[in-house]
Length: 398
Ligand code: PLP
Ligand code: TYF
Image (cartoon, rainbow, N blue to C red; front, side):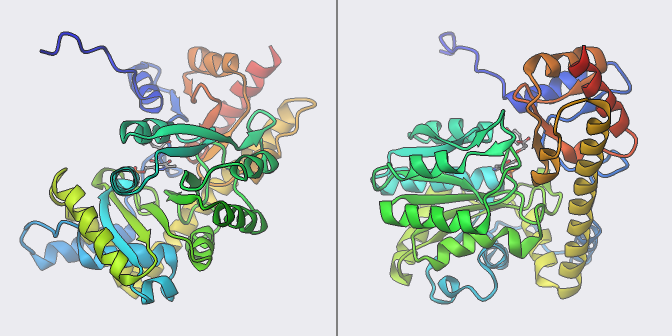
């Protein structure tokens, strides 16, 4: 039965983690996977999450099934976090929100909705984009194409290329847009550039699907969601996949959401009914623990304020690592401008380092980055940053 099955390619990002785990060097450094690590080298358990968990434990609630579309308080909190508490689209009953298995689950549920219930057949992702975007949409039955996104070896945004491409697309094509902290480049659009993209998307009749997996890691929870809110204000039907994996450091709990902005509340009811059917026939209902934590944090003014503070701490630490890395590399390498590192936002820097350098970092220094040159700045800390900067400079010189 299974004999004809060929071996699937490994996930390029998780493959790096496997190679890292197999490296016996005690000083190995993993700059591959996009996970925020504190200065102590550990994935943080946020204090707001710890307190929410304590409250849940004290409540001794039974572990029953959640509704098909998830915990209602969670769905409400997740969509108002992206659209804003005073969102007119939410007030008008035009937004449908469904709890999903992480941001990935939100993307897949949205893909299945579009492919199963709309004429959409083609999806456009940025070049480059998160590796899983292509595979996910292809597996959902879409043809996947790319629009230009970066130039200068990934160090600068190619906005003209991007808008030029989008301006030529036919109505009904789906465009995947990273709302903030673009993965893998760390290059984001300015508010003026977003306004231009929204105009093009609207004029061409494209279907915007926004992916917001790093809300809070660029400027803050509200400013990072501004592109989503600007799309909603423009009155276009759209999809948004959001995630608490990074922002609440809840990776393994799989807490995400799909929000769909529809034309009116009757349409919203029909869309929700089909989303529930997709969930029902796939995994029946989502897991409860992470959603209870997230809704407890978002539902309590004190925990919410604490979260904001902790998120600010993560964001500030990443920014200081960016500044330190740029400064150290500038001091160590003659004639190269590393200021792009401080202009990029979020967890990643598309370093522009040649593949040969990436390979040497791995083989000679046990420093693991992606072959594309993407490094996770959020994995740098005060103890490993000198090692990383010296290793990069050494590999660039010889
Ligand atoms: N979208 C992007 C751009 C990401 O980088 C990630 C990262 O994990 C996701 C979606 C998926 O997030 P999650 O782990 O919540 O599924
Ligand atoms: O890009 C990253 O590193 C994160 C984490 O299949 C991730 O988004 C990587 C690969 C993957 C799932 C999550």
